[in-house]
Length: 330
Image 1: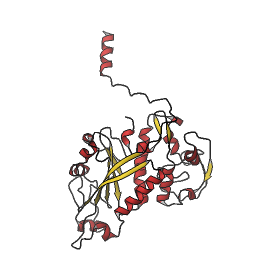
Image 2 (image 1 turned 60 degrees about the vertical axis):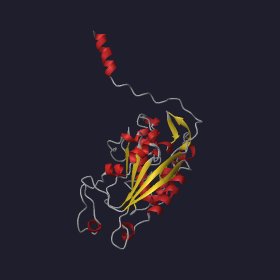
Image 3 (image 1 turned 45 degrees about the vertical axis):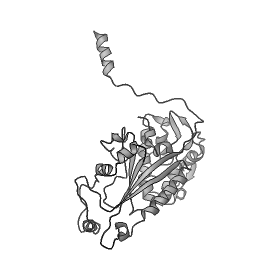
C-alpha cells in the first residue's frame, strides 16, 4: 500500500526543472539579435492650428530620439543588437487610463500648469492598446517582436513591461492574459519630453530584469550578473560595473558624477571576459561621462559581455537575452 501511495504522489508531483547545461562551449559564435519594433506615438493635436503636444511644449522630436537611440545601441553592442522600426503609428489622442479616463488638451495642460492634480489611477490601459493595434496576433505571426510607446508626462506607461507565455517581471508586473502572442515580448514606454539618456535608463531597467532572470538559478561567483553589477558601496573592494543607477563609486541613485576614485574590475569585464585576469584599475567619474546620463548608460552597456561561447548554459553574449527575452530559460 505504501509503495502504491508513493507511486501516486510521483504522478501528481510537478516535474523537476531540467538542469542547467553544465558543459562550457568556448567557440559558439555570438549571435546578432534582431528585433522588429512597432512604434506607437501618442502626440495629440492641441488646437485648431494643428500644433501637436510635443510642439506646443517645446519637447523633443520622436524621430530624432529614436534615431539617436538606435545608433547608440548599435554602437555599444558592437552591432549585435539590431532593432528595426517596421511601422510607426501616430495617434492623435491621449491614451485611456485603466478606468477609461482620457485627458483632453485643456485638462492635460491644467495638470502641466499645476492648476489640477494628475488623474488617478495613472496607469494606461495596456489591454486596450494591445487590442486596438492587434499586437498579440502580430507578435504571434512574427510581424513584430516588441512595441515602443512614446508619450508624455502622466501618460501612464511603465518604462518596460513584458507579455506573452512565460512573461516575467520586467521593471513592472507582466501583462496578464497575453499568451495569444505565443512568445514573450516587451512593451517599452518612452517620453518625448526627455532625452536619449532617459531612453537608455528605461532600457537599462529592462536589461537588469532580464539578466537577473537569466542568472536566477546560479549562485555565488557563478552568477556573473550579480558580479557584474557590484559597486563599492555594497561590495567594498569588489566593485565591477555597477547598475543603471549606480556607477562603481556611487553613494546614491543617479550619483554618476561622484569624483571619488575607486578600484574596479570594469576593465577586466571590458577586455578579458570570460577569462578574467584580475585587471583592477582605479577609476573615477570621468570614465563614464562625469554625470552625463547618456554617457554613463552607454559606458555601462559597453561593458556587457558580447563574446563567443557559453558557460553554465548561458551565452557569453548577453545581448541575445536583452533583445530577445524568449531566449531566457523557463
